[in-house]
Length: 192
Image 1 (cartoon, one colour):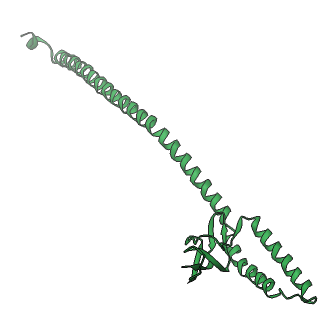
Image 2 (cartoon, one colour):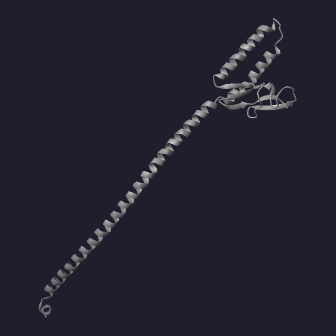
Image 3 (tube, one colour):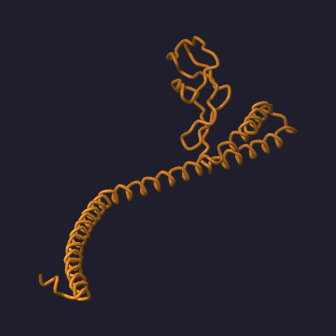
């Protein structure tokens, strides 16, 4: 009845106050729920951060090792390229050296006119051999050695008494090796 005796304006004020009290309680509950959910999200984010830091700690040494391996491979490739950069050039010089050797062999005649020419060719040949030796191009001249299919190319096989089988008995064309890599095999005649 008290509500009936109150004036309508007072009833409205009272209703507004009750609604404000209810809203305040709802806001407080929402704030608590929001704080709890934010705390849960923060905990989850911290856990994710910890897991990612652990993964990073595990992956970092691997990444460092991979970088070191890449660096070593690159250095090895550069070294290999440096060592074998002259291979094509050297293989182009080999026919010149062969021609000089043939000229020396064919001028073995004891002729006073040919002698100075032969000496000049011998000196040129020696300069070529010394020059290519500076770049680790080595001659393969296997006469009398055992046949090695990695460095020799058998052109023919001949029976020779008193010689062990698979022995190089004659070299038709010398071979060459650059830093341990075969540039041209020696062409040889092998005993049966």
